[in-house]
Amino acid sequence: MLSYENWKQLTQSRRSTRDFLDSPIEPGVLTDILTDGLTAPSWSNTRPFVVAVAEGEQRDRISQRLVARLRESTELPNLGAKPDFTHEIPYPKGLAERSQAVGKGIYDTLGIDRKDTASRFSFLERNYEFFGAPTALFFFTHRGLDQFGTLDLGLFMENVMLAANAKGLGTCAQGYLGGHPDIIRSEFEVSDDYALVCGMSIGYPSDHPINGWHAERLPITDLLLSPKTQ
Image 1 (cartoon, rainbow, N blue to C red):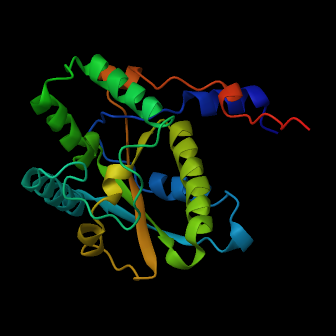
Image 2: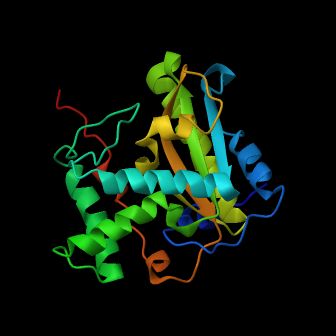
């Protein structure tokens, strides 16, 4: 049986990788990782999601199209994105502060000043270049199960990220990659019953300083609800 300490080491060492080597993932390794993802629980075992895998020329073509669209758009805050799923922008109070702290940590590590819009935009483009990763994954959920399908997908994605970590690969789940479903749909056979949620870059981490930074974990007390006074 897996010891708690080994499990804790695996989960705590997982973090978002934002710079990758261009070394391809060995044949069979990605299949193993995605298969391990299926050990996650699912609503009535429906597995209401599908995955698109982009590598090689297809990966490069998708990246070029995403970057081109970003450069064509100056409309904030969406920057030309028309996602299947939308959320409040800016983030709601109480959540926005956490997101802002992540942004500050990333830019401070990269040495990018808050007022340096050109450098900030260049780093934004790196999302659409998959941070140099050789493989990009795109995740769709069935529209018929609403939030329950998205919940199942999240459980699957977490297992994928942990399995990748155990094999020495890095991952970065990216909401930005869910912003242009038309581009992804034009590259893969996917039913209209499925909606694009997000993407993930996966590959071997580089030694770039950005990979040494990680977001501060919240104390669990910040998330626990207090009982009402009776």
